[in-house]
Image (cartoon, rainbow, N blue to C red; front, top):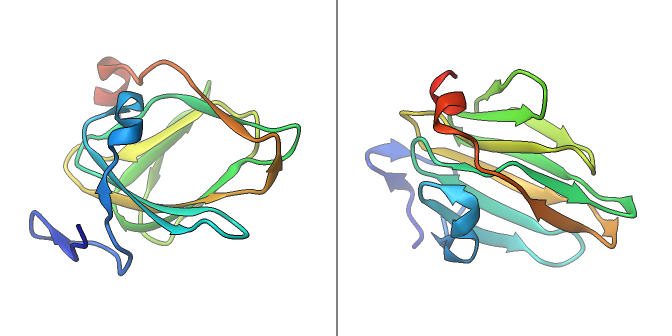
Length: 140
């Protein structure tokens, strides 16, 4: 699925990709994934339907690691454990160090798209945690 437009909203120039079925158990709502680069540095274009978000998760690494989000379209949220959520819009950049528990996803009434850049790591792995509760999300 390579769509420039979903539900009347223009998205970025990057391919939306296919339904993110492989990771759907870690998301509330529907998301799409397009791997843009698997060489040198992994870069994925992740698209979230309105109100879709991923579970709390942690990018672990023995050395290096973490993730960088480059927001390309729509409106969304990013939150680190124990901190207030941060609204995101196109052009925003989020640097997520290894070991930080966090989540990200779409605003209630907007598609949201970001490039997820995998920071090179020794023994990098993702630990998926609990979902973001409906109560916490509704309070945004």
